[in-house]
Length: 179
Image (cartoon, rainbow, N blue to C red; front, side):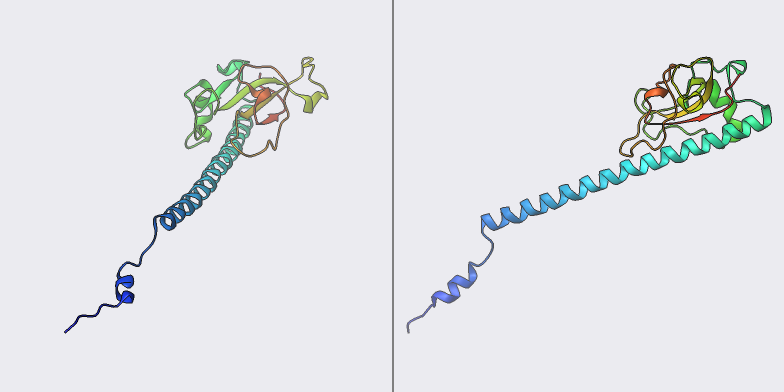
């Protein structure tokens, strides 16, 4: 008796993926993962920008409530320097806003040098006087120093102050200015 082995049965046992096929699949998975991660990162940045704009609106409402109660915005008479202060880091402006906010917000990344909110009680404004001469006319200004993705939807101030408000990605002005 002779045992016959067909070549078809041997070939079937050796079926599988080649090294090249596996490498191609790994590269495709890597490309799809990198696209997904970059999309996710952009969504996170847009979310932080939306939070920043929401925080500024919340601070604006608190400032307006302060104004209604006191007849002026916080300023040097309240211990806030005319050059302004960062918001959400324990400065005097935070103390003055605390009765109007459950928690005084701060930038989601808040590193103190690039990502921060600022308040300036006496800031030059082109929106009020038509120029940046700061000829004695000032406004009270509020700003988000840096947005990650969102283009600047609001910019109403000129140079002045120490809180980088004139270079901020987003700012708002209030009239009349603080005392």
